[in-house]
Amino acid sequence: MIKNKIFSTVLAFVGLLSIYSCEKDEEEMWFDNQYVFLEQHHFTKSELLEGNSSHTFFDFPTYSFDSSTGILTDYGDKVEMNKSLQLILGLGSSASGDALSGEGTILLGIDDISRYHTDFIITNLEANGTVYFSYRDSVMVLLPNEEWLSTSSEIKEELDDNGKIGIIKYTYTNRITNWGKLAKENFIKKDIW
Image (cartoon, rainbow, N blue to C red; front, side, top):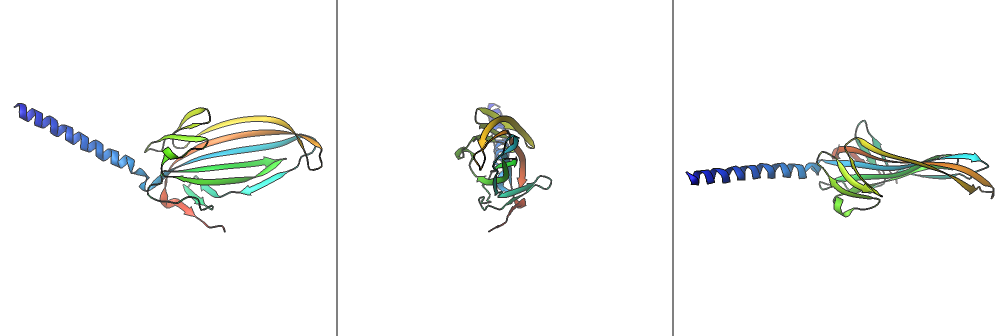
């Protein structure tokens, strides 16, 4: 009788262990066909308050994303799509207004979140697409299709091209968006060169 109880207990334990192991394997392999797209973008708006201003233009966008279709197009040839790719990080800066205009972006493919560090330190990436990370002095969690915004402004005196002083108000918006899990088959590479 005791042998039967021990055998039943061991059998139940092994069964639970194998179920947990299968669930864990499924969870760990979700990125075979999907990846999470996390995007950080800095927006700068410049407004001339007084005097004149020189104008700086920059333009080098290397990707586009259509949130309605989930299609991410890479023009910069930086991301190598493979089965181990877990996350694509889109980094960008854009400006508009009297003193600045343009956009510059880049995509980075991340196979191992523990080895990638910039302003971001990604600490965990769940199978449902939730991203845990620290950014500057903040620790954050972004669920899929959730975003974080921070806005600040400053007023600066700057010299224009003729050496005259202009007063410019800059408004900075920093946005981090978790676009969630996207299908790897909807990642498109286009050569612009």
